[in-house]
Length: 67
Image 1 (tube, rainbow, N blue to C red):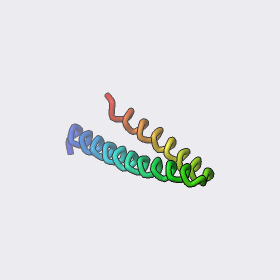
Image 2: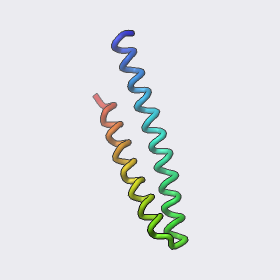
Image 3: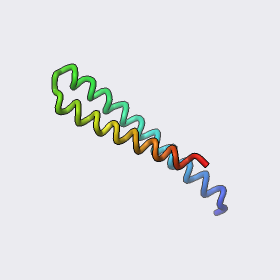
């Protein structure tokens, strides 16, 4: 397998991870907003914290993609 082909596969895998992380993050933000509306603050803050962690992970993966 050539180096450029391997690099494309790695980039594709990282993009897939970022898409999955962002989709999960959107779900968690939705849960957090609903928890704030129903006055379940412990669930809201926990999901918001996990969402921020996922945003950091997605940003780290995107930084890996940049040359």
